[in-house]
Image 1 (tube, rainbow, N blue to C red):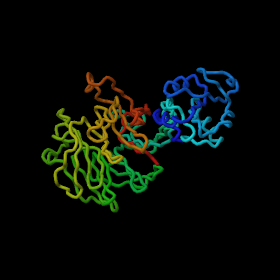
Image 2 (cartoon, helix red, strand yellow; image 1 turned 45 degrees about the vertical axis):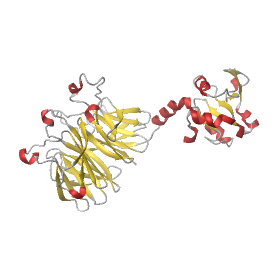
Image 3 (cartoon, helix red, strand yellow; image 1 turned 120 degrees about the horizontal axis):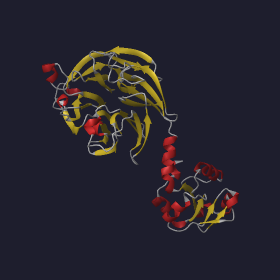
Image 4 (cartoon, rainbow, N blue to C red; image 1 turned 180 degrees about the vertical axis):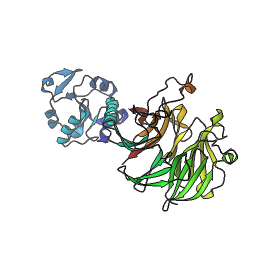
Length: 407
């Protein structure tokens, strides 16, 4: 059906040597279509018998049977009726082909996109690190855990309680980091617990997998280290130190968080390269470690980010969130989207991006900088080409850490 959606220049090119017919006497779409055409249509088709024999915008209106008298290769039909699906079905019954013999008016491409988003059917896995205890400043009514959001119903269902950070899909399973329990959860695709694997340290945050080497990487914000586990036996085989500062003071200085693996590279997002984030120096960014050269210093790829998260790799490009500024980057030069909250959690299904948002507990940092500070937790469905988005709000959560589109 996508072939029936064309741009104005395509419509004009197709209609160069054809007569134009509109299908649908619509108060909304005919007057928006006529000025865009290179010449007036011959007439209008409409299924409502009350319009037969009348005129609209000086064009005669005929019933659909009029098309049976035409040489279909000599005309091109532009649908200008609001309920275009029924018109498409009717034209296909006449053995007409979308794109070749007819298309929808480009004037309601916006309507098409709106309909597509409303009808988009996906299940989204959400990880939240919230607490259920009211005394904790990260308390929420629903508490932390793994949740599934259904886009059609906009309903959210808690599947597993806990305090979860980064999640990923590996070999037909879902892996999820529980940082209070210090466990790596292995889940079936229907979100049932298969096993819980013990971790070597608390304060785990980021999770990545190298399929070629069958290695699991887990970052730790408390020690500024990345633990490397063998997947098959889940045995700790090596550790990457972000710097030597933790060894000197036994305090995490860089706040490394989310990670991803692409071929031979491990990418890591962090709050402070200098190690001074707790002193108000938020010189955040992304570095690259070479998996075959563990122990060697990292390459600094992206600088000057403000509390970044969710470094991922989609369509051949590194993507990430400049969380505090609410910016979504594709590569280091393209700000692909801007949002009004603290952004964390990112996935892509080939059509839309999904970008998580948490309540902003430090909103005063943005006073005088941001024109709109949004406090809701949830996520955006985002069309990067048009910059159109839809927000799915979770009123009983305060934090979203990661997002995974389920198959």
